[in-house]
Image 1 (cartoon, helix red, strand yellow):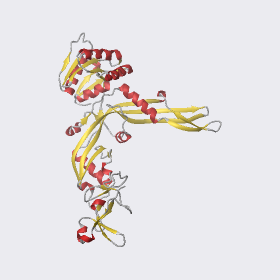
Image 2 (tube, one colour):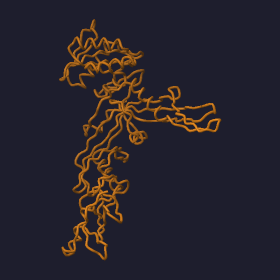
Image 3 (cartoon, helix red, strand yellow):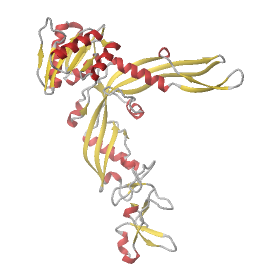
Image 4 (cartoon, helix red, strand yellow):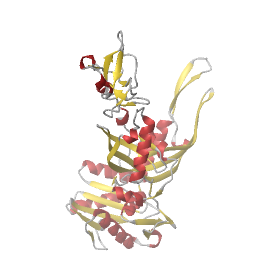
Length: 426
């Protein structure tokens, strides 16, 4: 487990649960949390005295049941009676679809009611330095390790050395790292299996089968995250959140705010989208038809729904005189994958270089590899230094041929022989 405080929800009653919620809220909000009168609380158990105004809180220790719309309506009345516009409903169980729909309606009326189910409560507890335990098991919130300062510098250096063509100096020797920020993205890792068969009067025309489908859903905003995140993180080991090795980085993090109910709906829609196919088939009359095969909820199963924080890094670096802001995924195993095109953006045309950019050893700009006409890059004809077009000079060779030179080698020639390459675009 961990050495953090464990909260055993199986052995407490409703009043004790309120005290636990009070302690959690005090720690994560950093302000006083008032306990209301235990009997006849009129829909409110706690009041969070936050700097931006009071938050009215109702606590329901109902691990085996779903909290419905009437409880949200009661809390809404308590919020208005208290002169507030914000509330929070915390349960150890789940919420009904009607409860979520009513809370969404309240947003349009200027009243925000956050519905906190068991997974969101587990996240709040983790942020407060606690572990929630139910049915003899702790309710986990996970994360991935991040590298130490020395390790990430080496990983970035190795990545750049493998990315660029650079002479005479390796990119790692031209690199300066000024800052590294880590954003912890709250996510639900969705695992699913599907076995869908589609038939017409001619028989089976299509099958969709997958035993270990995976993707991530943003646990705050409800978006399906890009496939690069799933491909990168899924094979890697996880550990319990918060990760001690992250403390030195003081990462930016958004808490989980999406409950299990809405997440499952988003996941189901995404699974259906992924496995909906237009299928061409020949009918009995030999005509070709097109059928849209859409799986239904009975043809797939969500096998895993795990809370996990995904570390996304942003580093401000410089290669000679050229700055870059690089967003990337990394892991202490040495793996790294960039999420933006800064390191591949050609300094001449501004387009992304698909493979093996040339790194100018004069200014540090990445450019497209050389070509016969309008080249964006050159190698010095005398020393072999890699150059971008703006940094290169040339002297006439013979006929229409030009001899590209770097700033050092060109000094051996008379000024009237030296020319700049004309600018090109595209």
